[in-house]
Every structure is written in C-alpha cells, then in structure tokens.
Image 1 (cartoon, rainbow, N blue to C red):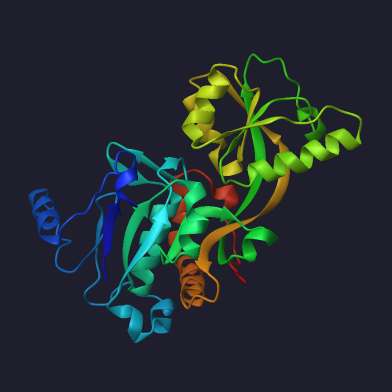
Image 2 (image 1 turned 60 degrees about the vertical axis):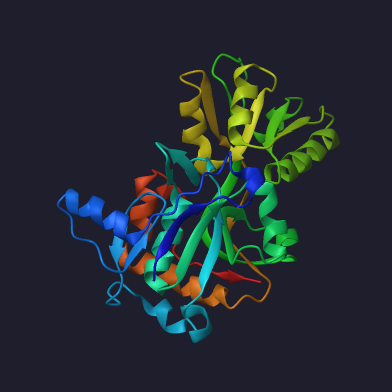
Length: 311
C-alpha cells in the first residue's frame, strides 16, 4: 500500500495543481539523511510523510473488507488545494484535514491511493464520469447530492459568514444578513443556503440577499477586502483560515448558523468503496487518529462520533 503525491487533474489545471510524485528511493534518501528509518514499502503523501506498510502493521478492520480486485489498483482521489483547513498548499506541500484523512484511510485499509487536486465545481461531474475513485473536499451532504453520489460522513458542518471588522454590521440572527451582498463559492452549498435565506428575507418584508460567485476562497477574500461584497458565506471549519487571511481586517460571526448538517467523502452511486471507507472512519475514530487530525487543524468542534454511509 502506498499513497502517491498529488497529481494535476489535467493539463489545463497544471498551473494551479503542480504534480508532486515522490519515489520511495528518493524519499528514503532524504529520511536516512535526517536520521530516520521509515523506508521500504511506504505510504507517500503530499506532505512528505512516510509510514511503513509492507508488514501490514497499522492496518485496521477496514482492510478485511478490501476485495482482491482493489488490492493491486491505484485509486485516484481528489481533494481541494485552496480551501484551508480542508485542503491547501503551504511551502509546496499539500496540507489539510482532507489529504490527512485520505492518507489515514490508505494506511488503515491498505489501498494504493494517488491524490489529485481540483476545483470544487468539477468534483461531482468528475465523480459521475468515474474520473476519481472518491472525492474528499469535504461535501455537505444534501438530498440533491445524494441523488448523484453516496457519502460517508466525516464531520459536522454549518454555514456562517465573515465580515469586515469595521463594517459596522451588527449581525445577531440570520435575517440580519438580508440586503447584504454575499460572496459564495462556485459549486458549494453556500449559494443554495443564501438563496433559501433570501427567500425568507423577502417573505418577511426584507430585501433579498444578492450573491457573487467565486471560483476559489482566495478570490472571495479579495472581494471582501476590497468591499466588493459585504460578507463571505463559508463553512464553519474555514472561519479561522479566512479571518487569518484578512490580517486583522476580518471578523467572524459564528452566531450566524445556517443549514447545520453533516459533511462527507463522496463516491459514485453503489461504489464498493463506501463500506470500506465507512469502516476506516470507525477505525480512525477508535484509534484516535481522527481526533489527532482534527486537533492539528483546530477544528475539533466539527468532529463526529458516529460516521454513516448515506446512499
């Protein structure tokens, strides 16, 4: 089992998604030079960590569910690269809860996994065309998305907003957002959440919620910084990362909690990987690795104790 470094989804995205494949021999040389001894058959991840796997050490109950047909395959898995703390690049390394969870799943199951990165709006179409074995951005699980994909839940989630600290807005409840121009992520659930809120605003005699759609969180941050929008709608896990990018100019409004639900890893309908990853999640929760990952990125409040396979 090995986890191969991130690969660009296609040539058109190579500028945004640099290929990062690490050979075992090269990594071993680096590790040995540093006095470490994690060589041999290894898990190789986008963040340059290696974990021995040839002896089967570290395999969980999920490994027992892996059919022979998958044991010699390399499965392509897609994550985000511009949405901290779920998936982002720093110093040339791919970090975040999503790539770390994918690595932990590979270690637990023994599956060979190659990580790729892509924009969020391409993931569901890519899954439907079987471009990837599974997608781990992580998705908010909606009834509409369940028509197209199966999901293993990995965390809780809700939509909230970030504003300029000197905006003067006194947001205390959801309808206080009425009339504010809001940045949303293309393909994300935030657009639907704001549309539902806008309808509620109008029903209550208040102005609608206009939205501007952006391809990446970084673009939304720039829009708020330049006051082209009044607010950024985001998932709770990204509040800290967005506020940090504001360099003291942004203020989180966690009291605005919209569309609370669970988020998960997505699979094609009926995929045999669903039950395997579900058991892997149970293994990682039981052995503490799951909590370790979420603690690393300071989003422990999003942890769950009872992952589900939703079809």
